[in-house]
Amino acid sequence: MSSPTEPSATPDFLNYDRPPVPDLVVPRGVLPFHLQHRPVRGRLVRLGPLADALLTRHDTHPAVTALAGQALALTAGLAAALKFRGSFSLQAKGDGPVPMLLADCTDGGALRGYARAQDDRIAPLLAEDATPSAATLLGKGYLAFTCDQGPDMDRYQGIVAIEGETLTEMTGTYFRTSEQLMTHVQLACAKTEAGWRAAALILERVAGEGGIAAELDAEAQDEAWRTAVALAATLTDAELLDDTLPGERLLHRLFALEGLALDRARALSYGCRCSRAKLAGVLAGFGEEDLDHMAEDGTITMTCEFCNLGFRFDRAELRGAQG
Image (tube, rainbow, N blue to C red; front, side, top):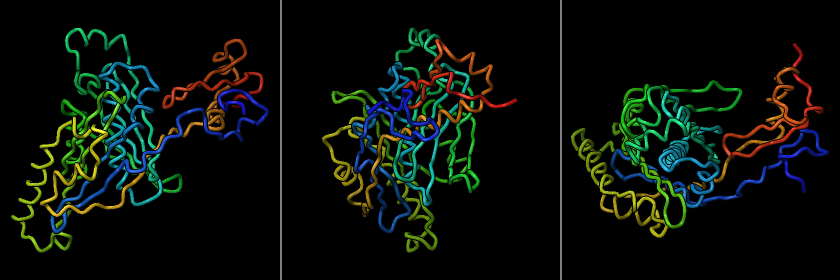
């Protein structure tokens, strides 16, 4: 079978075959949970080998790779709360050496993302700081969270200025200012002996009045939330990223005495959704002169920014948009 990245007898607009990327699923990538009779719910996200498969598609500095991994884990955790068919995405755009950070995840757990880095601007930073912060890498700009329910529904998007040194702090700013939601987020990503790993722990305070913590007065609800956050703060990055420590056991270590109740686990998968047909549709929007300019030796190559695969198109078979 020929690769869908190369020209073939199948018309481009019909070729939706999966490109040669990892066919990888992590069955228990997201563990949702709640604390019984307390105004707390959460998700534990552990990408396992999926992190390595996604992050090694691009050869970036470890600090950039770690930032991309944190974004993937965070996005997977937030997408797990979707109540509709669609996707959830995180996008950070700034004037720093990483001008674009993007991750998105569908309601079915298909995850993808990348960080666009300018190596010539990162190198001087490393001379001063071996591990530049997310704020240094992204610079000044904005952070956007988007819920997309498909072409027939309006997208919901919240945008805030990039504030804070870490992606965790930036996310906290978004939830405080845009969603008025109390959250606790911990993100971790590092290269281990088994490869790159990424994980997240997300806690959300839910309404107590008329809800799961209705029997607690306001002061008791506040105390229950503070206790949950304090317990979560004892979690280390090493524990979050440890493949040998099952997620259920990790959560029991933290919250067994707080009425921990595990909900149904959710799978995560390698989720790049590029195809020859989609990229051919993009090329169809260019004029003839633009296509001629893009061609080299009669071939146009379009590279998917997510999976970093180049799709080759014969210029002679492409018809540009009519002016």
